[in-house]
Each structure stands twice: as structure tokens, then as C-alpha cells.
Image 1: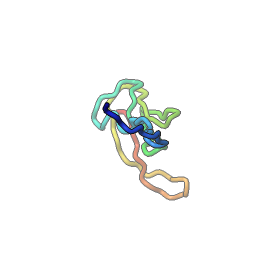
Image 2 (image 1 turned 135 degrees about the vertical axis):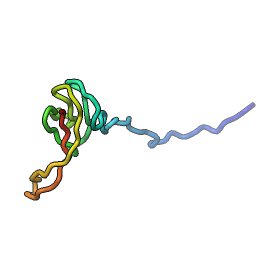
Image 3 (image 1 turned 60 degrees about the horizontal axis):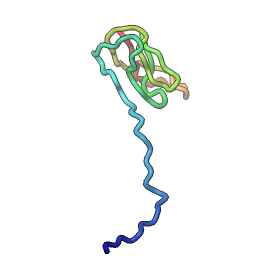
Length: 90
């Protein structure tokens, strides 16, 4: 008879599901109203004209148009002026 030694259970071996974060629509692409542009944790990208930030920090389009990414000097929490990446709809 074929035998196989019993394998012991392990406490490891679990993995969480991917969160599918990142940029969904790139600069120059057309966005419909309500389309998600960026899925993020925290505010790496900030919402500009024609875009808003959702409760989970994702950025979505308020109106239809082309997506535009640019940098803008913004006063940070520390009081320093630094560049922030803005997402807007033209």
C-alpha cells in the first residue's frame, strides 16, 4: 500500500487579497463623470478642478473631460512649501 506521512498544520500560509490601488486613468485619457481616476491610501495625489476625493481617498471625476496631472506648490502640514501632485479634469 502506498503511504504518505501526515502533514502537520501550519499557522502561516495566509495572504491578503490585492487591493488594486494605483492610477486607473492616465493623463490625456477621457474620463466620464463619476469615473475613478486614482485609487490610493492617503493623499499622494490631490484633487484639482473637476475632481473630488472620496472617503477612501480615491479621486474621481465630477464632470466629463480629459484627465490632467500637474504639480503645484502647496503649503504642507509642517508649514513648508512643497510640490503636490494634482489631478484635474479639463
